[in-house]
Length: 76
Image 1 (cartoon, rainbow, N blue to C red):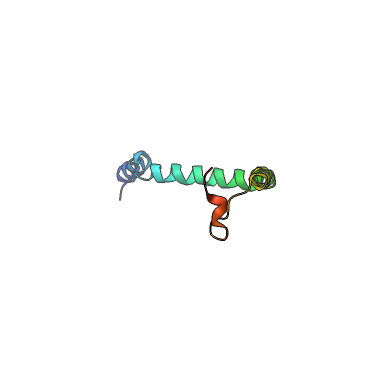
Image 2 (cartoon, rainbow, N blue to C red):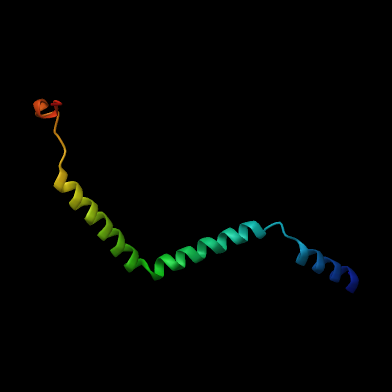
């Protein structure tokens, strides 16, 4: 193998773009994972607050139990 053949193979490998789409997706996922790990306490606190507020609002309205007391589900 001479120097020109080696140089051509290296240049061909360098210009090849077949795996770049996969690499880009892997890099995006890696960045998202790093951000999620870095801000996990804040994210968990935000989610707990969000679900806590939703739970309080739902708890104050209540739902009708039509199975045990069908009379409560009748429309006026």
